[in-house]
View (cartoon, rainbow, N blue to C red):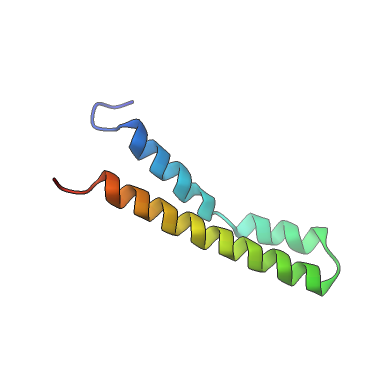
Length: 67
């Protein structure tokens, strides 16, 4: 790791990587034919993406907090 980067910074970036949901929605439309299942899957994907975004931003705000 570079001298100014710590593992906790990398962990925050990894949590934020959970936001990448575009491909999941695409695969959902290919995997399911029932509209109810597609809607449920898309809702779960969006909820998981929001959770990852909030968790990642929360973690990084703690990591980069000025002391």
